Amino acid sequence: MPVTTSSERGPDLHTPLSGVPLTHGQLPRYAAQFTLLAAIAAGIALTLAGWNPAASAIIAGAGYVVVIYAWSRTVEGPRKARDRLVTAVVTGAFLLALLPLVSVIVTVVGNGIARFDVEFFTYSMRGVVGEGGGAYHAIMGTLVVTGLAALISVPIGILTAIYLVEYGRGRLAKAITFFVDVMTGIPSIVAGLFAYALFALVFGPGVRMGIMGAIALSVLMIPVVVRSAEEMLKLVPNELREAAYALAVPKWRTIVKVVLPTALAGIATGVTLAIARVIGETAPLLITLGITSSVNLNPVDGRMATLPVYAYYQYVTPGVPPEPALERAWTAALTLIIIVMALNLIARLISRLFAPKTRG
Image (cartoon, rainbow, N blue to C red; front, top):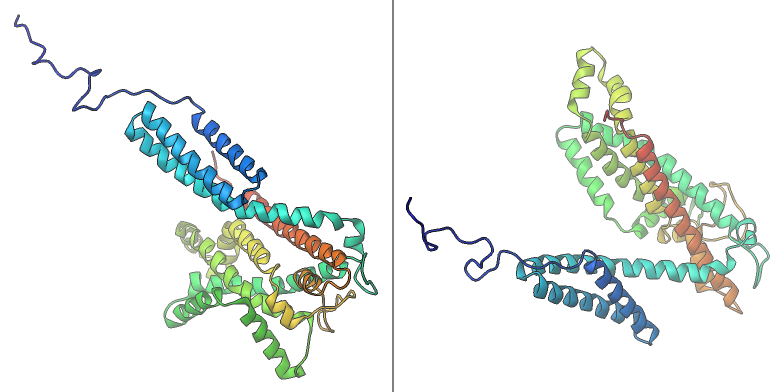
């Protein structure tokens, strides 16, 4: 039997190939997590030492990236180090993006919790000067105006989406799609000016009514509902429509009994998110509603108060001393954030409950 020399055998798996070793060490399992926690602790320490919070966060993030890359390059080699470098950069960017959100939440909660009491939710500002009072009239006004806006927007938006997906062909459908895209990007102040001009033509200048604010919000809400409903309807498989047509079911009945129930979860989620998007608008409500210190639940009779406008006026006209009004403004902002958060949670719950059931 011929004897093969070492030069004739293949390369050893444990020897370097072209100067690059095939095996490397490996960092501990939780090395990245511990390094990130150490960087966060360093950022907090710098902030407590008097540094600017933003500068501390940037320094901590940069330190995390440098440390994890250098550590990985020393132990695991350049290829794994580059992978950890990209992971660290993405993680650091995510945490930096969360920083403004966390800052807003901490600031609003810290300043608004002082007046987060029963009186704030059960009393209006009628006859109140200085301390006391609440935002009951503004909370009820927000619910009334937003409810009317949803009552106007949801049928129009869903019917428009049905037309675009199920019936729309040709120039009319393209024109509707174009104008929906344009309406999606219009400034909110334009919606308020449109509603004011519309009612001023009929009732004269200086008119203020709750229905005006509802129409202004519906101008902002309709394109969101159209877009979300349109995308959900497009996701319904054509096989379901064809099966209904094969059974001689009319098209309108197919849409009502097959298409809409299948897309119900997505449509309901889009509607809820559209409501959350407009409930905090201030500019159009400043023009159309103004402000009042009393409870007014009639949307076609006089001014109404809403939470965004209430917080705005409490902040810009605090009176003397200003502290009670500023506390009310922060608490109104906190209440608005809680409402928006609740709407987002409701949207997720609706999406989970009404999603089409699939067999495992």
